Image (cartoon, each protein chain N blue to C red):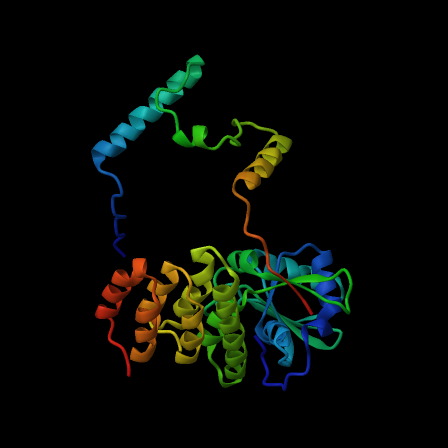
Length: 79
Length: 250
């Protein structure tokens, strides 16, 4: 059966730019310099942990995130 | 879902020993089926009994439940078959239990659990059980729609319609006021509200978004006229515009 090709979500130029920016970020990280193309979510989500965070740090980050964006309260019924 | 057409005789509490077992084993699950309908029915004074208990869980947890039940010494009467029939059937203390990981009209088990409601029991201290949200249950029953589901559909419709009215009466935020009614329209796949329900909502409209919603979803010309004449001045132009696009029954 002939395999159908997935539709392109980005143009070739967009894809090339993303790969270039990632490579630049990796190189800057290796040199210990600030990332030239930082992910805006890193700034917007103050609870985000660094790669290699411990279980406790991840759990603390989860608790802090729940304070910013709490899950909806569950309805309780009593029979 | 039940495998036989046995007459219902159990409520959710009758399955307390098995429910305590599942909760004790920390298996994530929610209750669906007749026992779930019965739980909502009782909140409105309607008794619905079921022949069996239907438990809804993820495909992976279905096998966890089967394993734990077997280890508890209970024989599995029907093994789940991953590709075509993801349901396990067994009897717990003489009562049939079905554990399913998919059912027509229901979202994924994880999503159902997230939206499920917690039921506590005055007669069973310490036990609390997640029961699928009544809107999800209604969508499920409408999709399955066997003759035995029809009385359940009526019970669930009555329950969610009361919640829709309550939201119009009590909620303040626009999204919370009209959210249940929107969900009802989605589930039942209709554009217009049932006339008796719309007739109860129109007098409760207070804010502009209520009027826009009702202008879009009242079923009759008479109700549309009431929405038009009672809408606040600031909302009237938009209400008129919405109503001018509608084709309404007399």
